[in-house]
Length: 167
Image 1 (cartoon, helix red, strand yellow):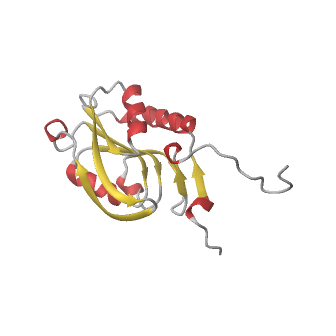
Image 2 (cartoon, helix red, strand yellow):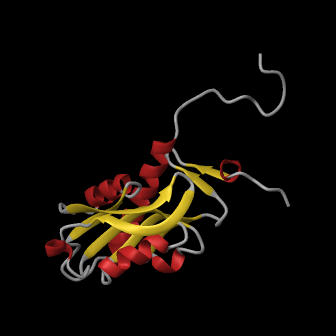
Image 3 (tube, rainbow, N blue to C red):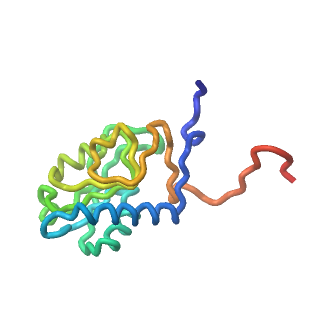
């Protein structure tokens, strides 16, 4: 077994791929619309904002808010805590609320969010096995030891070839 750095077992997601996957999430969510429809989308910042915008557009949900949970410092996970809540007069216990995030990793962030809105429907674009029980709907599962590189984390740059001269 080799010890890989997070970027060595990486799953690189382009803006185009994220858009396609968020639209696929929207299509999947169409079969889970609660009676009375979705009242609002709550994006988990920061990663959930882009997919939440796409989902809200595709499902014609006009009320969009955010919940900010800090649980990462770069690639190190810490104890999650809510640092900004959505309008609780709107979201209440979560009935009719769609929570959207880019990824569920261990599920610790979603535990905090679910406590705040226990009746909400949680959807993520990507899911890792440890966090899957916290998600109601997702599109793509990746292994627990894969690091996902989202488009907002990357910049275009030259990459040296794997083999051969670099002329």
